[in-house]
Amino acid sequence: MCAGALTLLLCELAPGQPSPVAADTAAATGFEWSLPRGFPQPFVPAGNPITTGKVALGRVLFFEPRLSINGQMSCSTCHRPELAFTDGKPRAVGATGQQHPRSAMSLANVAYNVAFTWADPSFDSLEAQVLQPMYNEHPVEMGLNGRESSVLAALRTDPRYPPLFAGAFPGDPDPISIANVARALASFERTLISGRSAFDRYVFDDERSALGAAAKRGMALFYSARIGCAQCHSGINFSGPIRMSRVPAAQAEYANTGLYNVDGRGAYPPDAPGIRSVTGKSQDEGRFRVPTLRNIAVTAPYMHDGSIATLPEVIDHYSVGGRQAPLGPHDGNALKDTRIRAFQVSEQEKADLVAFLESLTDEAFLQDPRYRTSQPGPR
Image (cartoon, rainbow, N blue to C red):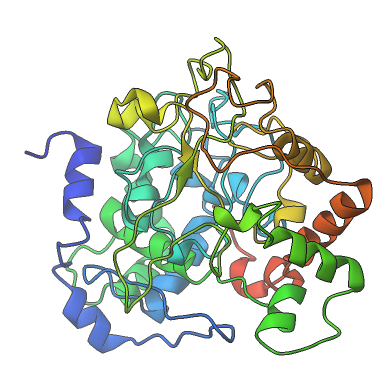
C-alpha cells in the first residue's frame, strides 16, 4: 500500500503505470533522438513518453533553485554540465549543509542506466531517482518534503512555468505537480548523451588519428586479461549492462572493490555498507554500483566516497588488489570481488592507461548549450 508523500509519488511514477495523459502528450509532441554512431535508442518507460515539451521544461527545472529548502540549490548544483554532471567534491553537500556519504554520480548517458544510485537497486527508473534528492532526509539534500505546496505555488506564479507545463502535459487539467516535475526532469536527463569522445571517433567513426599512441597502448591494457578493467567497466557506457529500447531489462553491475577492510574481514565503514543496507545480505557488504568511466578525467575525486584523488592513484589502488587489504589469497577480505586482484604495472603503462581514460572525455558534451539554461531560478 502506498503511504507518505514520496511513496505515493513513487507509486504514481512506477514504470508500469501509464500517465493519465501519456497518450495525449505523445500525440501532441514528438521527440527525435540525435544519437552518436553506434548508440542504441534508450529505453523510455510507457508512463512517461519523451517529448520536446517535457525536455524543454525539464531543462529549466534542472537549474531551478526553488526546488530546494534554501532556495539556492538546484539539481545542477551537484550535477554541473562542465564536470560531466558531477560536482568536483569528494561527497555531495545538501541544501542545509549536511554532507552526503556518497559522491555525486555523473549523469552522462544516464538514459542507459539499469540502476540509478550508488547502492540502492530499488530506484530502477529516472522518474523515481529524481525524487530521492528532493525528499531524502538522512541527510537532507534538497529538502522538498513538506514544502510541496509552497514550491508548486512559486512555480504557478512564475509567468514562465504555466505555458511550459501546459506544453509538456497538454491533457492534464492541473499540470503543475511534483509528479510532472519528476517526469520532466527525467525526460531532460535522458537526453544527456555523451558519445563523441576521441575513443568514440576512433571506434565508431574509424577516425584513426583520434587516439594517440599512448592512448592506443592504454586501450590495449584496459581490455587485456592482465589488467582486467573491462571485466567490470564494459559496454558503451563502461559500466556493464545497459537498458535500451529493444532490451528494456538488464542487471546492474555491483562490486566490492576492496576499498575498505576495517576489521580484517572485509567490513566497510558504518556509513558505507553498499547494497547490504537494502538487501540485508552480509555478502553484499561494500558492493557499490559500477559507475561509468565516460568523461572520467573531469569527474575527480573518485570512488563512492571521493576518497581517491587522481586517476594514477585509482590505478595504484587496483594494482595492489585493494587499498586497505594485504595482498595474497588469505588477506582476510573474503567480501572483495574476485575480479579485484593485484597486477604488475609499470610507470609507462600507468601513463598509457591514464591517456586512454582521458580519451573518454567528450568536450562537445561538456560544452553542449542544450544542457544549459540562461534563466535559472526566480527573476
